[in-house]
Image 1 (cartoon, rainbow, N blue to C red):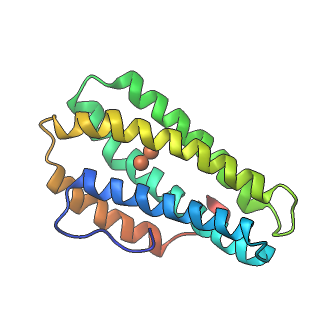
Image 2: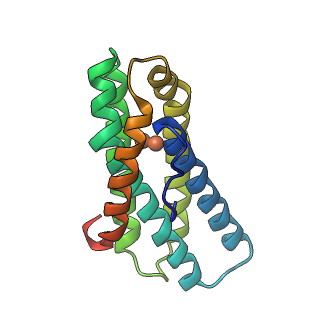
Length: 161
Ligand SMILES: [Fe+2]
Ligand SMILES: [Fe+2]
């Protein structure tokens, strides 16, 4: 998720690519844990996971969810997704506030990964399908997402996550 989206994709492709990228980061974290990697190395990766998730959630909340809310009757589903984003943000804030040697860093990152996996499945199996079947211009939305993502990445401040 450190790269901008491809210009040929639509909004769902772009958000799905983010999901795959963050899944890969969580898998890398598990590998570091299994290998007994130094705390500092794990903390650096945890920071990148937090950045990826914060920016992705913000993109969805600013652009994807509101447009979907207008286009289809999925209010309850979107409400649930926003609550899941709040839970993600809480865990991200906890992780960013911990020092690298805190005993609970690994546990918090792993629980965050489980939570995000559940949320992402809900988006992929329900929201993304609805978006693709809607009248939304997902190509135009992709341009919006790309532009906003580059702004958020340029201005990322962990202490404000
Ligand atoms: Fe989401
Ligand atoms: Fe998502």
